[in-house]
Image 1 (cartoon, rainbow, N blue to C red):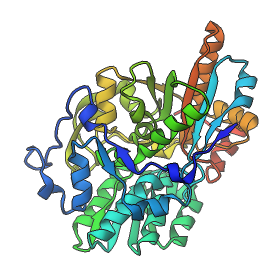
Image 2: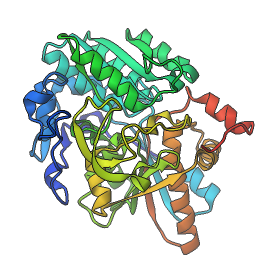
Image 3: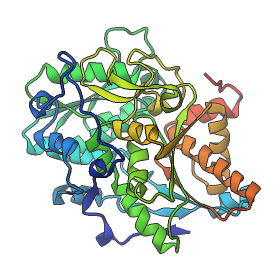
Length: 416
C-alpha cells in the first residue's frame, strides 16, 4: 500500500528544531581563536541566507517558491506500507518506509542541494565545491547546480571514486567535475574529513566560490525536515496516530534528522539512529568540540566524534564513514531523546537482501542500515506480540552499489 500526498500538499515551510531542543546548542568555535564564530566568519564559505538559517530561532522557515518549483519534480515522495516484509517476518508490527529513492539523484540529498544551490545563485556565487562519500551528495549537488547554472567541483573519497565510477559519470553528465580525494596523496583510501578539507581549501582560495555541505550543519537538517513533515501527514492517511519508533541511518545526520525531527516533540515516539560498527560515532565516540575536517580548517563543533584524524575502513556504506555527527543529533543522543545502535555490514546486507526479495527494492548500503534496525524492531514485536508501528527512511536506491551486493552474494563481503 502506497500513500501519496497531493502535489498541493507539499510542505511550504521547513520545521526548525533549534528552538525546541532539550537544551541550547553550543556555538561553533573559530578554528584559530577558539572563540564563537559569527556570520562574518562563515561568509567566505556560505551565503548569508544559509548562515541565517544556521542560527535562526524561528520555529518555521519558509521554502522559497523557486525551490518548491524544483522539488516538485519528485516531491511529495510516497509512504509505503511494507506488507510483504511484514509477512516474511511473521510480525504483528506495521512497517512503513518513506521512499526517497525517486529523486533525480536517487536519494534524499537533493532536498538540501536544491535550496543550497538556489541561495548561492541568489547571492551571486558562480561556483560551488563540495565533498562526497558514496557519491549521493555529489550527485545531488551536481543536479542542483545544473538548475541554477553554477559550476560544481566535487571531491570524492578515493575508495568510492574507484569502486563507484558511475556516480562520477552522473555528476559529469550534469556538468560537474569530480576528482578523487585526498588530492595530494593517491595512496590514501580517503575519508570524508579529508575530502571536506580539499573542498574547503578550494572554495576559500577563490572569490567566485562557496562551499556546500551535504550533512551535519543545522541548515542541512532543516531542509531535510520536508521528509518527516510529509510522513506525518501520510501516516495519518494510513490511519495511524503516531509511529512507535522512527529509524534512519546516520553518517552525518541529515536523513535521520529529516525524518525524525518533526516527531521529536512527541515523547511517545522513539527515535533511533543506526550507524556502521566500523565507524561508531554515536555509540563509541566522545561528546566534545572537534573539527569537521581532517586538516582543521573548519569551525569546531560540539558533537560526538571519533577524532577528526580518524581513518574509517573502506566499507561499502561510504556515506556513513564520517568521524563526527550533526550537533543537533549529538545533543539528542546525549540528552537521551534519541537512541543509537551500530551494525557490522554483514548483518546489514542480510537485511538488505531480505528486503529486496520481499519488497522488490535494492537499497543503498546506507539505507540498508535502517532496514536492519527496522527488521530487528519488527522481530522484537513478534516476540512480545506488540502491535507496533515502525517507520524508517528508505533514503536511497542501490542501483549504483551493485558491487557491494556482488561481494555479499559471493561471500567476499568482510566486516571491517
